[in-house]
Image (cartoon, rainbow, N blue to C red; front, side, top):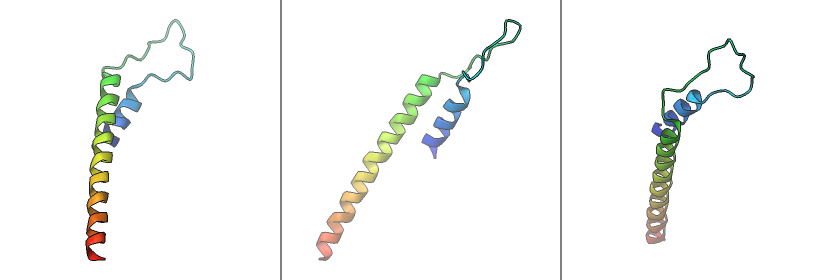
Length: 67
């Protein structure tokens, strides 16, 4: 949930580049450090993958012991 929240916030904070800005328009400037937020989300995703791998290893070991 934390990783998804960080991803969603980072995605929302990025300037949309699908339109051209006129001279009289105000530009959107993000108040959030998006690269740092994405790095934290990536770290959480990696931690989740490591934990999932450990859980699967324990499950396999348990299945082998029962056999």
